[in-house]
Image 1 (cartoon, helix red, strand yellow):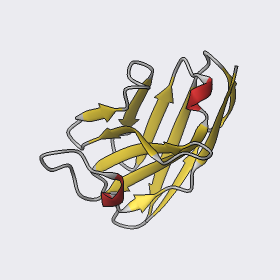
Image 2: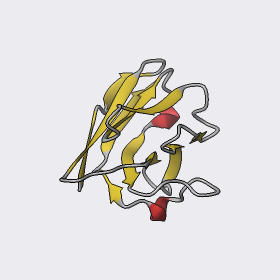
Image 3: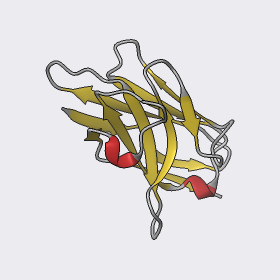
Image 4: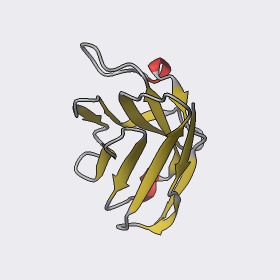
Length: 124
């Protein structure tokens, strides 16, 4: 299974972007999905994650501005980012897993597949 992320770019503060991530491969079945980001000199951090039933977790810094979603066949996921801020500048990575959440959401190392990353740059 390969993940292809797209939609990054340069945007002014206050603008919007929508990231997409498509999974390819035979027999792909995706349940848990997630978006993470890594800024220069910083650790990778969770942005938004979702279970197959629609439960979601968001980083406090993006709540109310970002929305994670997926298309009906589950193999494409999106991250709608509104009211972008310069501190949102990072490489964004999508993650997917064939297994779903258990009692809690998945941590980064529990995902089966990762995209190559797409750069988001927000200018002030």
